Length: 401
Ligand code: GDP
Image (cartoon, rainbow, N blue to C red; front, side, top):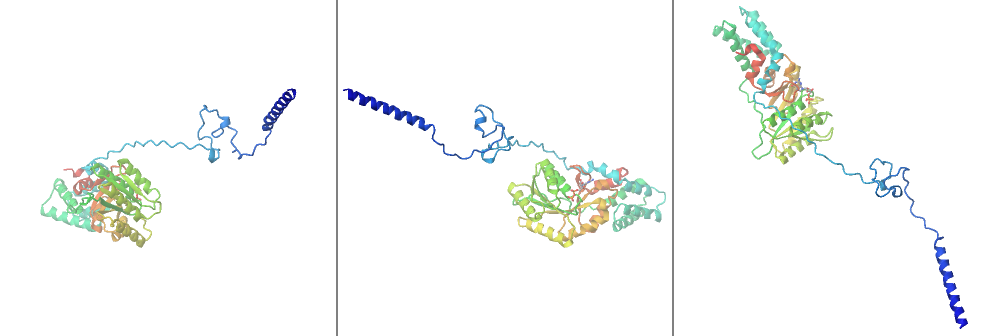
């Protein structure tokens, strides 16, 4: 019995000893090396679990030094749609009459000069020569000035005109005649029968006001209830596309643009495609007017036109001319008439010259009607051209009969 008891005690002692040995041995087992922990800034930040209590609000992207794998995803930017209030352009009807004061202010030299001359007691040869010189001084051009004086002289003689009051309406009539009332000055900006947009190409020497004219014209069209897409095909002047887009944004017209220095023809093509897709009425395309070489310009404009015509016809090609450059501008512009068929002229900066007779010279020399005139840098300072209102403006207030 004693032996059995001894055996049980011995087994118990042995079991306890083994258990103690197992427990104490576990604490000394070597730990396998884990992956190196990424170094973090001393400043507690995202990814540094130990330093950031769970309920502490985490700091955001300021912790820029964190390596990529532990950086928190950047919160998606909140894009608030920009609420750009659109401009409401001035109605176009009667714009020239409204802007007349601006024109006549610079033109009164012509009106005043003529009436001073014509108010002489005797209209002798010298007086008529002076009339002609005054007209030439207004940039009317020799042919038009000579013709006007000849016709006026005949009428004065035939009608036995004696007073200035009688002479004024004759002068106005002759001026209107010289400006021309027969030409079609309407702009073809209505969509085609198949629903495709009308396409207006705007060309001219750099600095004449092409981009500004495109912008102002977009406003004219929007004021008349049309929808417009702008094509920034002047890819050579760095700021041209931005400038055009700013004009477009103000009236809600989208602008199609390409990379700087890119192919103008492809921008023009895309702009028309966009106009077709959006179902707009008119696509206006601004072009570059580099006069580097005549062939270069002709090739470029020719290509722009041809590429657009893959979509459909170009309805208007407007040549922009700076009135302050006078006859020189007309000579320069002739290159464009050889490159593309021009359907109308936009004469800009008429507010900046006393030589409004350039309207007559330009039309005679190029055989193309002036359709629009620029009378200032303001957004609505572009007016459809009306011969009678223009003649009144040329002659100044004295012509108001
Ligand atoms: P582009 O190089 O032919 O595109 O010429 P811009 O459109 O950039 O115009 C050149 C400059 O002429 C700009 O400062 C315009 O504000 C100015 N300009 C354009 N049209 C008129 C106008 O009718 N009157 C005046 N005074 N300035 C104008």
